[in-house]
Image 1 (cartoon, rainbow, N blue to C red):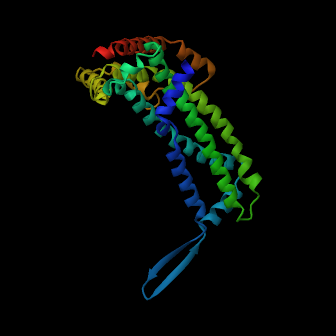
Image 2 (image 1 turned 90 degrees about the vertical axis):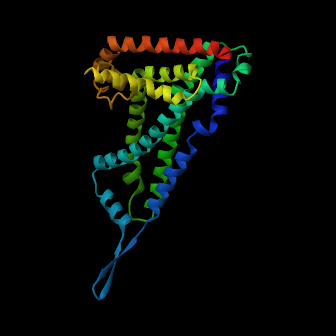
Image 3 (image 1 turned 30 degrees about the horizontal axis):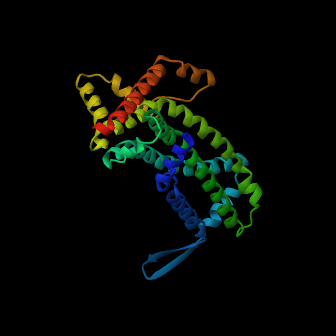
Amino acid sequence: MIPTLIRREFWEHRNTFFPYVTVGLLVLVMLSVFAVGSANVSIDDPGELTKLDVRFMQYGVDLFRDMSLEDRRSVMGMAYGFIAIVFSFFLLFVVFFYLLDCLYRDKKDRSILFWKSLPVSDLQTVGVKLFTAIVCVPVVHFLFIAVTQLIFLLAASVAALGYDVPVWSTLWKPSTVVFDQWADIGFHYVLVLLWQLPFYCWIVFVSSFARSVPFIWAVGVPLAIVIIESMFGEETISIWIKHHIAPQLGGMNLTGSIVEIADRIASVDFFITLILSGLMLHGAVWFRGKAAEM
């Protein structure tokens, strides 16, 4: 039953979960850059017109070819990292608005009467929606990241054929850095997910009880708490909220050795995180059960 529910979520949100538009935009940018072989720059001097032929691609290829292997790995790493960042940016919006709408929409269009007639518990429904958002959708985006990075490498290789450079040693060999990035992305996402869990559970909770404008509830309540606390010259709750919405932007360091990371996971703050997440998830399940009566 669980796999069927997950497939249902992907079927209903197939245009949202699969980032085809993001891939298309990035590929378009790549092709536009690689298509620029030369550019004419005109300088208007008094009495004469000087035209300079500047081959930007040739200059870039020559500069990249003369770099050391480590420098080329660094450059390729930045290119691949940029692709991953673009997908991550859109992923945040997809997950946020999907969770915000996942339980609210069923109440709004009254389709909840149909879904509650199926042999599926409220806990399964809420749990599957949360699992789909924070696990399944990121996995799909990761696969799209890998495919787009491969497209970038192939496009760069084709473009390099027009220049006197060895494609394997210049592009493919330093591209092994992408495997390190994939491991970092997976490990980093799990760590961030653990700290963002209350944030995701809060959105699901809002989606379960809000009768209208769930966005205002999801954003307005934390913002009101931050403002009220600041009026008393305190920021304890504000810092906690920042840490669990965007850990790094909130000044929280999730990097370090395995021992340091294990210490953070074993901290009181993390157990509070799990308890609050569980309470909000329980609240979402309860409101889901009462939704047909509301």
